[in-house]
Image (cartoon, rainbow, N blue to C red; front, side):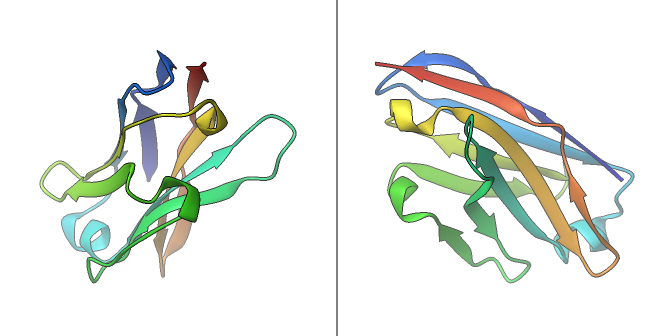
Length: 117
């Protein structure tokens, strides 16, 4: 199983980015029965949960991103997304995608998001 994150970059405050995490080596039933999530880690800080999408379709967000970020997935593409709007400098971090399944816990390589004021 591999997770490949993309879509990071540098934007000004108020801008938007859409991250994508494409999985490979995953059959459809495994993907649909997994919890998918995005985490982030800013320099000098611990990794933190940003958003999650359970296998039941329930979404949860960190308080600081509620109303600005949206997690979604495309089962046919085995891909999970994170739409980030109204970005703030405090959102600057390396973003990691995560797939949690009873068979294992898998991480992508991370993609850098930098928001300038």
